[in-house]
Structures are given as C-alpha cells and as structure tokens.
Amino acid sequence: MSRLTIWGVEGIPEITSQDQLGEIIADTCRHEPNGPLIDDDVLVVTQKIVSKAEGRLVPIDASDPLSHKQLVEQEAVRIVRRRGDLIITETKHGFVCANSGIDLSNIERGYAALLPIDSDKSARRIRDIVRAKIGVSVGVVISDTFGRPWRKGLTDVAIGIAGIAGVVDLRGTPDSLGRIMQVTEVAVADELASAAELVMGKSSGIPVAVIRGADKQWFRDSRIGELVRPPQEDLFR
Amino acid sequence: MSRLTIWGVEGIPEITSQDQLGEIIADTCRHEPNGPLIDDDVLVVTQKIVSKAEGRLVPIDASDPLSHKQLVEQEAVRIVRRRGDLIITETKHGFVCANSGIDLSNIERGYAALLPIDSDKSARRIRDIVRAKIGVSVGVVISDTFGRPWRKGLTDVAIGIAGIAGVVDLRGTPDSLGRIMQVTEVAVADELASAAELVMGKSSGIPVAVIRGADKQWFRDSRIGELVRPPQEDLFR
Image 1 (spheres, rainbow over the protein chains, first blue to last red):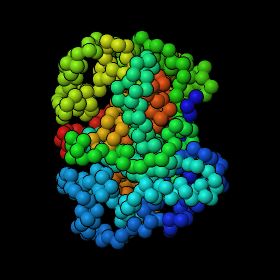
Image 2 (image 1 turned 90 degrees about the horizontal axis):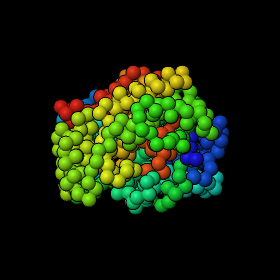
Image 3 (image 1 turned 60 degrees about the vertical axis):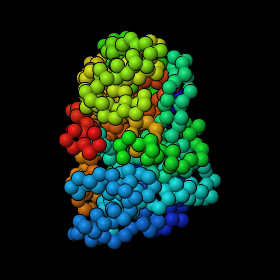
Image 4 (image 1 turned 30 degrees about the vertical axis):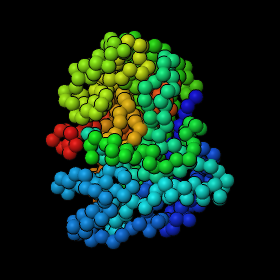
C-alpha cells in the first residue's frame, strides 16, 4: 500500500556554509522524534536556506523600490510581463516566475536572497554529504514558491533536484481498464515540493522537510531541465 | 510538530450514483488498515470518479478526433490557445486547462468524462454524507490533473472544495525574523491535491486519498473561487 509521511525538521540552526548544510540536516534529523534519515527518504530544502548557505544574499536598499527592481532585471534573461510593481521574468535557469525568484521575507533586513546559481548542484551536494556522513541515499528537492497565471495563491515547486525524478513518464502504461494511456507525465518533484510546503508554513521558519514512502521507482539521476518547458514549446511566453 | 500522513484508499468499488460516493468512501476507510476517518482528515477525490457518480459520461466516437474536439469546444467559454491537437480553453468554472478538462483515460471506451457541473457542490455532498453517516467532519478536495504553461509534467490541483480552505492568507503574519511579511497566499487546496496524487498514481486506479494532520486552522467554509484568478487580474489569457 502506498503511504507517505511528511514532517518538518525542527531545530535547524542558522546555516552559513554549503558544507554545513547536508551535515546539519543529517545531524538534526538524527536527534528528531522521527529518527534518522533512511534510504529513499526525500529531503525537501527551501531555496532560502540554500541561498544563504551559498552566499547568495546581496545588499539592497529596502526603502528604495528601484533597488529591488534593478536586481530583478539583472537576474532575468527576459521580462515576460510587467504590471505595476509586478514583474514576471524568465531567469537564467529558464524558470518563469515573479521578480526573478528574488524575495525579501525571512532574510535579514537590507538583504535580498537570489536563487542559487545551479540548484541541481546544490541538491547533489546535500545528497552527497548525507551519503558520505551517514551512508544513506536520499532524494533531494530544492523548493521555491511560485505563482501560477490562472490560479490564485502560491505553491511550492522544485528548482533543483538530485537522486529523484523531476517528471515520471506514464506514457504507455496501461490504465486501470487495461488500455494504453495517452500521455501522463506527472511532475513528481513539484508535487513533492508542494506536499512539503504543507508542513513548513511560511512564517514558522522550518526550512527542511522529510518525505518518507515515495515510490522507489522515482529515485534516479535527474536534472531540473525535466521540469522546464523549452521556449519553443511554450504557448504563453 | 507538524506531520502529515497520506494514503490511497484501496478497494473503492465502481461508483454509479452520487449518494453512494460519500457512503462508500466512509465505509471503505473503516475496513482499511489505516482505520476509519476522523475529524479534520482531508479526503481528496479525483474528478473522474465524481464525474462518473454524477452521470457526466458522454458518448464519443474515439476513432474520430473531431468528436472529441467538438466536445472540448462545447464545454469551453473561450479558446485560450490552440496548437495542433492541443486546445487550451477556459471552462465554465473559470479553469484554464487543456481540452476543457475532458479526458478519455480510465473511462470506458466510447465515453468521455466531462468535469462536474459544480465541483464545490460535489465536494459538499461528500462531506455532508460522511458527516451524516459516521459523524465525522472532514475537508473534501475534488482533484484534477492540469498542465502548467512554463513547466513540464502535470500536477493535480483542486477543482472543488468543501470544509477546507482554498487559499490560506499569510499576509501580515510576522516572518521568522519578526517582521511583517509582504504577501504570501498559499494555495493549500492545490498542494493537498498534489500531495494526494503522489499516492494515487495515474494507472493504479486509486481514486481517493486521505490526508491526516493538516493544520486545523485550514478547516472552514470555502469555495473554489478562492483559487480561480479573475480574468481582469490575468496577464496571460
């Protein structure tokens, strides 16, 4: 029977370097009521803590809206839409999102957190350190909070992955009536990020969640490109 | 500590009427290894089973692509984009999705399943029947599988809700550094739908999942309009 358990990892201290991040996550989990990480757990780690660990905080004049705007444009490869203060951009990674993914909440005043330069690499690093330190193979999803064009409210999605599929392709799998299905490509990494957000909360400062029970077939080499629609397929850019 | 458990409800038989749906879910859960439903569980029920229960199957000539196309146009209030066989429409409910939400998988050959006419009502009905039958108050999310314009792969989202928030508004909640946050409206009903999809699988024929442990503050009267961006706010229609 398929069954998932998801919890927020409490007690993650302030992180100041990349090497610490994987170690501290493994350590903190070991002392948690839920116990140590095991093979095929998925770690969902919010972008903000990764950006902090990777020194992606930049000074910003919070009283000057232009300061934020310039940063957004500098981090974008293209402005997709603009209305009032809202700027939808395409980032260097190919993500289409508000403000190039830069945000100011839960960051020291006077600073903004940019997206990691290569979030897959960030995810791989956490995965490798956890394996080196405690001998356990986990999937890692770096998550961020994006809007959607036709739906209100934000959901968390994956911006970097390691050891866990981005998209699971069910094309050709027979449906429950035994016929070959048309196309069903499920964005499992995004769904894992969304599921984790439900235990993190936005104001509670829990930057890491563990998901236990994910389908073993989803654990494999992967890259975030699986989830990024190429511009030539895009009907809305 | 915040902790979610999610499982797919196995053994749901073929459903043929609305009244059965809530009863059968409550009954099936009672005989499941996970035990009966309790207050503040969230039931996530896939659109397909709801459409079946509500007689929303219509005959279609599967060998004639035009037959499908006509149905898609008939169920749309507007064609948003068209490329080849792909039609992105706005439905009568205000959803922007592929093919007006009509799909042919897991449906008897020769039939297509239309979206429920009023999915909030479908959700309320399940919620009311569960309460009447076993005296338990659950949130209900009717889920469907939608694409996203800039991301590959599909995720499940809410198309009807009852007793559980669509969007939780964290505007004005202090962030973990004690400052007032800007805007964070989390689409929890969509995240619950996505989380549930992870235990359902597309080909395994599990049409109902239970999520236990959701934040008690999310349980309230609600309507899917919370999640539908009005056309005048839309930058991409």
